[in-house]
Structures are given as structure tokens and as C-alpha cells.
Image (tube, rainbow, N blue to C red; front, side, top):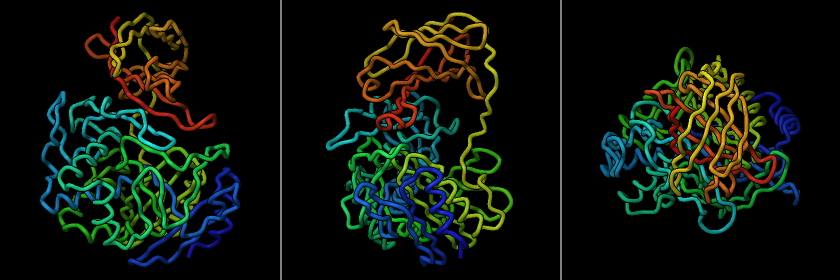
Length: 441
């Protein structure tokens, strides 16, 4: 049904340096294609098979969102009721959190090794904008949803998802957790240059990133999740708020708009993981592509090949969630700005010098300085990324870069200071931590 798939996948893996890929297609409730290519574990020479389980990263969100919707159908929570807690603005609703409009900002943290990680996401779980005022992709929102599910159901998140989503749909190889216990064999995760990640990877946001499944189970989930929900709740899943001219984000799914059949999708990427799930309700068709490399290029190529063959008029614009925030030149005048970055350890002084050539020099309280180009966008008046590490215990774990995204408001530059690591070409993928930042001239 997809001519030349094997040859194409083998070449895509070779071209992009990806160890393996598993591809599944389900139609009208049945798996009609299940193939795997390459090595699930390179050093041991273990090939990938359709029965190999892969980490899903953010594809997990679609499953967690289904569990939240089930709890709503059970009367355990309401989609439009505020989530209890103490916030700067009125509390976000469940629906807003599902749609990444709850006011949280970007965050991820990963701990490679046994036990819980040293990053406490609660120290970063503050609202950066008024709930409902805009979209910002937020693992912290799904962290809060997972904690809410545990509170209202009295069950661990993984147990509730297994009992109410996986088991009713016959997903025998599904698991939620920092490592995969079986029964399926597991694909080892690899860096872009072929180093193996540890099997255990914990985070502070399991409902956003810690899913595992085979491609066949994932394709069947996309085929069947709607039948678990009340009709009005299933319709609410696809009621997406627009992100751009082609896509919106619903309840745990990216949803296409415009001409052609509606495509629901969700991608996932983290250290050693690149995954994609897409479903076309009009065709009763679902496609899952799972790979075990941080580089997403092989995944994207295979997804494009399969969906182009199966979905009339398919283009990448129907699944790629690009925010409409085009880059523009930074036009702030030269001058010095001083202020601070808010961290869990307190306010840290920061100096920003805007230079005449549209570059900036950033100085930390430690005396370290770095210079880099600066740009702007529709959302931010200044954006820059410099090789500086905030001197906090969390940033020193694995976030050697500093990014500033600031808006000019009432004579101040306000926004976020992000600490992160640029990929995993050296070591393993680090953490992405966001901090409030305010500077004055």
C-alpha cells in the first residue's frame, strides 16, 4: 500500500544516521502495515521489529489528554473549571492547560539514571502570562494535569492511563514511566553521533513525555481513542484554537484546517527519541513512525513519504506546528540595561549592553561576559543566545547556554531568560529552564 517503503526507510536511516525506525498504519480499526528497519540496539546487533517498544516523548500528551477527557466524562473534573492552586493571575482551566494556553512557559528536565532527578519543576511552575491570552507549548501544564488526575482519581497517573485508555483499546505494550519494563523488547535511544542513552530517563513532567509503545499500539490508539469518550468530548478534542493559517491545537492534538481532510497529529522529540503520530478521521487512517535518535530528519522523511502516499493533497503544513512569529531585525537603540533574572535561588543581577551593530553583550553577576547577534520577532523586541551559564545549582547540571526573549513594555525589557543545552552532539541532552527577567535602562 506504500510502494517502495522498505527501500526508502533504509536509505533515510542511512542518510540521516538514525539506527532504526518502526512504521505502522491502521485503517478502520485494523493494523494493515507494520514494518521496522535498522537496529534497535547497535552494539548487540539486535534488529528493530514491529514488536519493539520506543520512547514517545511528547506524543505522550495525546494519551494523557485522553485520560483527562475520560475523567471529565466521569464527572471527576470539568474542562472549564479552574485548576486549584495559587497563581499570579486567575487559575488556568483544564481546557486551557490541554491547549497550551494555561499561562505556563517552556520547560523540560531529564535525569539519566535511577531515582528522581534533582530538578524540581515546581520551582518553575509559575504563570508567565494570563491564562487564555496566548499559546505557549508547556510541559508544565501537562505536569499539572497529571497531578490533578492523580488527585481526582486516587490512582497513580500511569495506572489510570493503563486501566482507562490502554487496556480498553488492547494496547498491550503501552507504558508510562522513566524506563520500559516490558513485555516488548526496547529500542535503545541514541545521540546524533551514535552514543547510547541510559535506559532510565526521569522527568518532572511524566504525563508530557514519559510514554512508551510500539508503533502498532500507537496507531491503534489513534484509531480508537474517540470511542472511549462521550461524543461531545470527542468533538471538543478537535476544537482547536488556531496557531497559524494551517493548524490549531486542540485537546492534546495538533489539528489541521483549510482544504483537504482534517489531520490530527502530535510529534515527539527528546534525547534519543523522534516520534510522530497522525490520524485522518475521514479516512479512518492512522500512521505512527517511531525512531531512536535525537535527530528528527529520518522521522520527518519517512512521515512525509507515508502520508504523501496515503492522504490526498498532503503537505507538511498539515502536521508541523509552526507558530506565526516571523523574525525581524532588532531595532532597539544602543544602550545599557540592568536588572535581574528570577531563579529558585533568588534574584541574580544581569547587565545587557545593546551595541551599534545589532549585537549585544551580556554580563552575569559572576563577571562572565559574552557577545552575540540579536534579533527580534512579532512577540519579542530582543532575542539572543549567548554561551553563558547561570550560576544556579539547576543550570549547572546541564544548561550551559543562556537565551533572552524580552519585550519592551512601559520603558522596561521584560520576558524570559532560558537556560539550555544546544542538542546532544556532546554529552546528553540537557535541561531547558525558564526564568523571569526584567531590565531597566
